[in-house]
Structures are given as C-alpha cells and as structure tokens.
Length: 132
Ligand code: FES
Image (cartoon, rainbow, N blue to C red; front, side):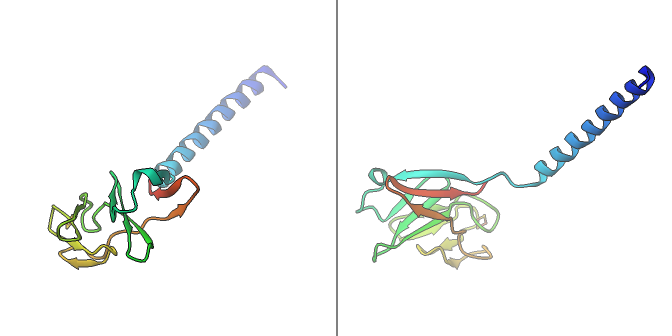
C-alpha cells in the first residue's frame, strides 16, 4: 500500500468513526435513561405507617397488607404530588388534582390516576423501580 493510500484510508476511517460516534450519541439522546432501583428497608417503613413518602414515590400499605407504589409526578403537568394524611388522599398543589390511596383520580384536571411503579420484595425490604 502506498503512503498516500494509507493516509486516505486513515482519513476515511476517522470520518467513519466520527459518524458512528455521532449516530450513537443521537440514539442515546432520544432513548430514556434506564430506571433506577431504590431499596426501601423494612426498618425505614414501620408496619404502623400506612403511607411512606419518598422524594419520588409513595408506598401505600392497604388494609389487607397489600402494597402499592406510585410515582409522585402528577400525570397532569408533572408537579410533585403530596400526601394529605388527615384527608387520606394524595393532592397535587399545582391544580388541585386529587388521588385516592389506590392511585385513582378523584378530581381535578389530571387525565388519569397516579403512575404505578414496579416493585419487588426482597430480604432487606422493597426494591422500587423509578423511571429515568
Ligand atoms: S400538575 Fe397536578 S393537577 Fe396540574
């Protein structure tokens, strides 16, 4: 291979690598980040406590011991929903959407109930999947 051909090959390989890198970066930009897994230890959620409020989630212990997990992100415009223990509901402070402890929409402009989160029980507690 002549020197000129070799340099042309190197330049072509460099351009090709640049396009590949840009293409992969564009694909990664449009894909949602992977969900995070958060461990809630049993010691952090006493049995007597019906609702556990995390920064991004609600955990609800129903009377039969069943557990539900919801995102705190309001399905209307994404405000952070609060728990109202005296009323036994979840309330969005932005436009007053209300949700039951089962996550169902009770009132307000939200188009649906709270987003359920996947969870699983482990030896140490509960692992929640928080979408990225
Ligand atoms: S953002 Fe929650 S009701 Fe509008």
